[in-house]
Image (cartoon, rainbow, N blue to C red; front, side):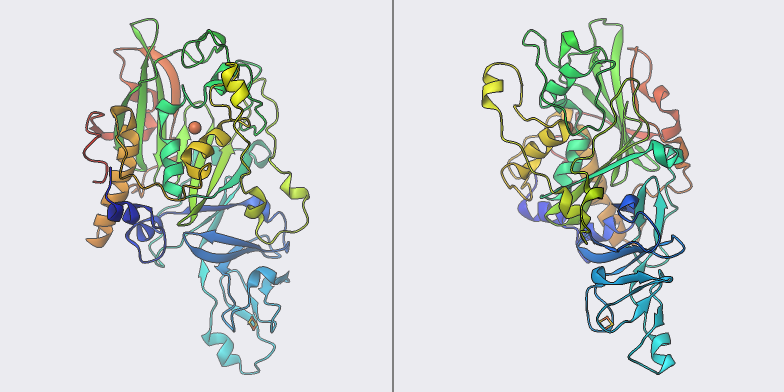
Length: 448
Ligand code: FES
Ligand SMILES: [Fe+2]
């Protein structure tokens, strides 16, 4: 549990707040690059870490990210024209290039003024189907993380984004939470078998839950080799942040089922078996983006569905708004008839969204009354690294997980049945884990 003050410190993302400063020291996966599909297409508005920004693609295809409000007299550049190498404000026509330089200033004939003023701009990299922005102090950018899935051809990458109406941390905690799979996502597990998998789908219909199956899904689900819902969690720090193993017993006592999740601190979680990443990005203190990137389809999978076919919509200057999550009602009949465990249709993301706070408009989870158990060890590790990074920054040191020369192309997640006496680290040698953290130290150290 955390005090209200500690929790606020942990959750706030704005400039000048302890965690806001930490979060600015990493490349932020800020928007799907497909939102800017071609040179000189309409710009988009972005909210990232409480900053209001505009992103555009210039005539040469380069991305630019600038402060949203024009440095002349504050018109929104989201309404600007993108033309001939720049973004032009529609108020008085000032035109900016991707580096924020003013290239035309129709209402001022003095060229010295043009030289002196610059629109605030941010470094941006396009990779893995996303636009990545750096909002930290100029010159402090860490090396850009080139994850294995970024090597996929663009056509093989599926990028989707949903906007969640709550603080980012409770969503990220859900991504690092192995022990909810066998409860909340029981319907999904029961329907998951070769040839029927709907990876990244938003259309999972809440298929029949086998009432005879033991948790989590047991009988019908090849690919779920364990019904152990109290995984042992072992975490290790790594150059990129941390990784952890969720270790489950199997019917064969000589074997264990291991899932290794690797968090490239603090936004990008790599989860075994998905071939991509799930990403949570704070928009402001009370909203965040949940982005899924999947590098390939699993054998037999159907093509992932796009939630709202947003590409076909008329221009929306804030495309993330089109992805605001509309939650389905809970199907109590299906629950009573034992056809569904949680009664939430739409698949994992919808089920996650309900419990992570959106269902009851719990914008920022207070954490004052929680009781953590050993299965929550990865969540404790996330909080610890955030809090300790803030302490380190305030002491003039580097925060955790900046890489320090680490080759992000080696980063791995895993999902496998192994011999019980085999070290799980052998599944993910590229992660360079160090300093194992005991899974029992959970209940008293959540904040530090
Ligand atoms: S406010 Fe943008 S050009 Fe005047
Ligand atoms: Fe989940």
